[in-house]
Every structure is written in structure tokens, then in C-alpha cells.
Amino acid sequence: MSGRAMAETVQLIISVVVCQLAGAIGGLFTAPAIPTWYASLRKPSFTPPGWVFGPVWVTLYVMMGVAAWLVWRKGLDDPQVRIALVVFVVQLLLNASWSVVFFGQRSPMGGLLVIGLLWIAILLTIIAFAKLSSAAALLLVPYILWVSFASVLNGAIVRLNP
Image (cartoon, rainbow, N blue to C red; front, side, top):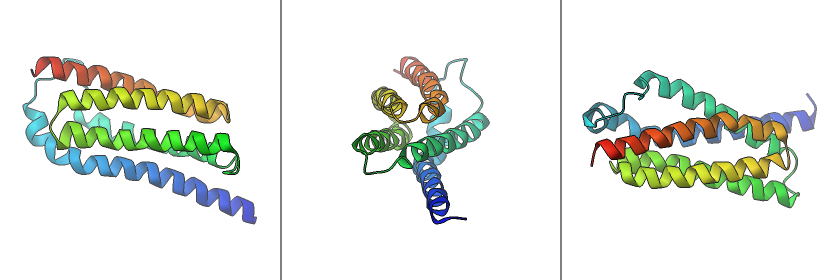
């Protein structure tokens, strides 16, 4: 394997691991609340079964990592790459923050605010990535669709649990 190929492989691994770590941080706040506080909430009829969330998020985090890598490999010397990756990191921080606020602080209304900001940050990330890699932007489409659904679910939980 050439030096460049090795460097790109390391970048890919770092990108995916960082995204998975964001999910793991969120999981630290989510897991303890699921059988207790979250179980006590009224939820809408369209709430997916609990087992769906893990595989969906693991897949989305892998796709996010690959998308970030596709942009990163264009080179950090490009200002557009740096800006796109900063926007990506902001959305990743908002992603982890949602779990902290919704589950950790037990605040569906706070979660709704964070997920709204997250949705905007994902859209900005898609726009920034599209300027550099259409594949990277397309890899984030399932993510924004899932977060759109999660936003509706979060909003319904706020409405059902005044």
C-alpha cells in the first residue's frame, strides 16, 4: 500500500471512529433513561420500536464518517474543505448534544430546540459538502431524512407530555 493510500485509510478510520464516538457519547445519556424516564412518556403511534434506533444510528454514523472523509481527502489546504469540516463538526456536536438535553436533562422541549438547530446544521453541511463532493452530500441525505422524522417524533412527544 502506498503512503498516500495508507494516509487516506487512516483518515477514513478516524472519520468513522469520530462519528461513532459522537453516538457513543449520546448513548451514555440515552441508555439509562430509556427504561425509566423515556418509558414513562406518552409517545405517538408512529414511534418506531426501540431496537430500530441502534442499527439506524450506527449506519448513519458510518455514512457521516465516509462523507467527512470524502471531503477531508480533498486536502485541508483548501479553505472550502476547512469550512465544510468545521460545519460538519458543529452538526456532530449538536447531534451529541441532543441526547444530553433530551435524555440527560429529560427535556423534550430543549431537545426540540437542539434538533431544530441540528437540522439546520445538517443542511448547511450538505450544502458545503456538495461544493466539494456530490457523493459526500448524498451520503448525508438519509441522515437529514432521519433527523426530520426524529424532529416530528420529538415534537409529538412535547405535545403529548405537557
